[in-house]
Image (tube, rainbow, N blue to C red; front, top):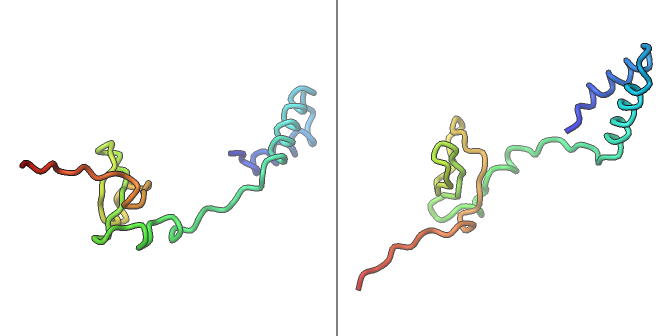
Length: 102
């Protein structure tokens, strides 16, 4: 992601100070490339990032990625301090079925 403030400062610097022509060209090319990109969007509100009731099963659980376990876990919404930041709806991953002996 482009740091626009840093790029603006660099553009001001090359305009105000003597700089090698190749350096000026590099800065201008990066500025042109940044301007050709879509405008950066603000971050998504937390309420739109977390699972809603429609994403959870009847027990209020959905899938959370647990870095410590290196696995998806079916769990209720974690407490704020839990480092789980990736989630999927409860129906997104299959639940292993226990085989019934006959």
